[in-house]
Length: 163
Image 1: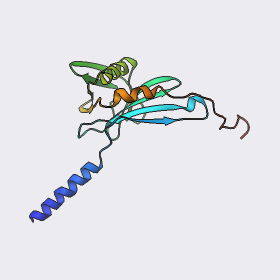
Image 2: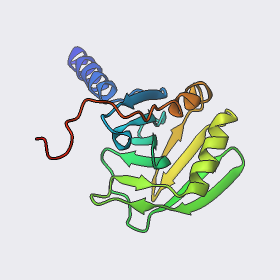
Image 3: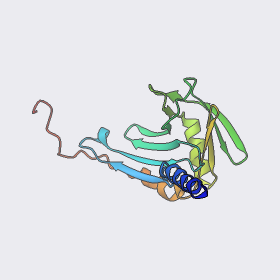
Image 4: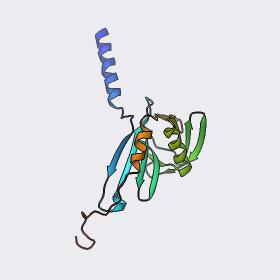
């Protein structure tokens, strides 16, 4: 009986740990045929155990955007989000995309989060009763690479009307 409980506990822990996302800052690049198709993405999942939030920075020809993504939570359509960094705390209202799992933050929120992470201060994002902690480790060294997107026209797409 004791072995069965131990085995079930071990299996439960393995299953829980297998659902975790990487919590380090990762950069991805998309180089398209046209400038509008090229982008860079810097993202990290929250380090807090029970949170499924992701911060996602996107840089393309239209500028830099900051999103909060959720894999299992539908954001309230009010778009209200509380962001804490150290002793500072700010409330913002973002734009919730159709489906409710992607929230675009306004520029003041983007600037607040960027500065805190560049200063090495962890950021806590709260939406409704859910929150996630984002570690600043690695952000300062990877953030400048977000700006290195090349917006070159490449000769890989056929001209319009030639398809």
